[in-house]
Length: 97
Image (cartoon, rainbow, N blue to C red; front, side):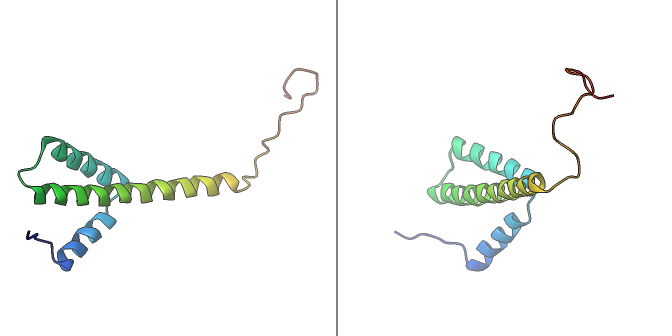
């Protein structure tokens, strides 16, 4: 069985292309790839190419989501200078004016 593989230069270009995508771009293209896979490809090789592209796009989305989660965690752990303790009232049961 003979398989045609992309040269490393072509794979590298595709990887570089994916690495430059925003989260939204990678997600939108992943949705398109999944739709194409669901419709079926004319050849096994085309299906494998779509699968590989989809896997790389999913990994890119995961990178963005992990980075966003880290940024949120860092922001939540920083002191903001705002007092977040419950408000004390001058009279029982009422907020301070």
